[in-house]
Amino acid sequence: MINTIICDDHLLFRLGIKAIIEAKYADIKIVGEADCGAALFDLLKKTAADILLLDVKLPDMSGIEIAKKLKIDFPNLKILTISSENSAETVKQLIDIGVNGFISKRQGSTDDLGAAIRAIVSGEEYFGRDISSVIYDIFVAKRAICAEKKIEFTDKEREIIAHCQKGLQCKEIADRMNISQNTVNTHKKNIFEKLGINNTMEMVQYALKNKIIEIN
Image (cartoon, rainbow, N blue to C red; front, side):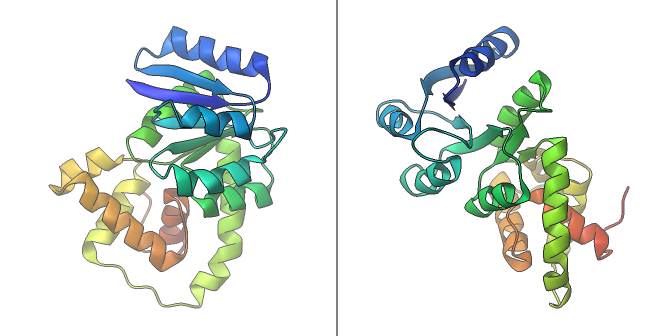
């Protein structure tokens, strides 16, 4: 069971998310709700959760402030941002902090919600289509900096990048390469550090643009 907490100041939104999850996803359970940052941190002291569905605009703290604090106080809690605030600056700050995914309230679907929660808990990232376009713009801005550096990848790193480009998740990559999921994640972390990025999408885009891999 994937234990999930919702932090959003709109009661109807929380009720809607809860109703969708209860109706469609037997493996996901809402174990708590909060309408502000203070209520969230009080809740986390007594309620264990695997993932948090977090809005950016809250009455007492921003989602950015909350995400920063969570990475320190609750580093194992996965964070899926669900918000209509998807400016490049906001998305960049959240990615730099290390949130695991972002779905827009404007364009996200109920299928996106379930797919995102499951992917993130399994160790992947998940970004909705319109968020992906924002990330691409951020990537283009970073590309000039990366292009100035000569970055070398090991054969295993190249293989992992190629598998990610095909949309394979961590477990599938591990099975194909006959290595553990932890080893896959370690390789990805090393790649991210080399490129100065925080997510799989930017990694694949960099590799395609620089012909490290080809589209299959």
